Length: 189
Image (cartoon, rainbow, N blue to C red; front, side, top):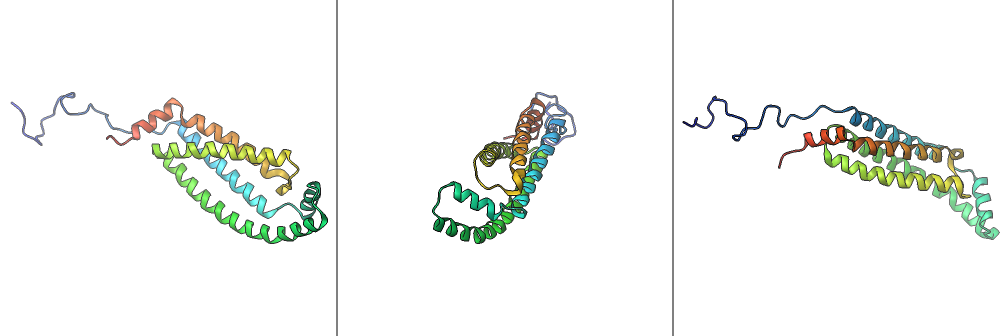
């Protein structure tokens, strides 16, 4: 005889009742913890590189040498130098505001990844891929091309280190233990 709905009588697995332990989220694996750490270190290096760029911008002599290397006529060089001062101040303020906002949002994404949100894993994977491309592009350009660089090129080196950290982040985030962790946290549909 069938038990009425809501009775305390246990039912057999396979008859509409999931097996014991089903739906229990897996514990956070070391690969996710380490990936989160790499994400945070890369984020910290990003903030440091931005701050160095604001605190130690290229000098007027660096810009003058750059404009001269472009073969600009003296009048154009003077005009460009006049524009650099005000543009640098505005860019510094805007850059600091953007850096703080980006850092806060990216940290929140990282915390969501650590909590097992698969959408955050995908989002940060895309952001990490874009970050790798921009880090490598910016670093190589400033280290190879004759453009004025901030803080003696230290931000460019930090960009290269950030790119390496982000590659490690991606590798760890998609290893088998990480994927199992995110799958265990998925909401059934």
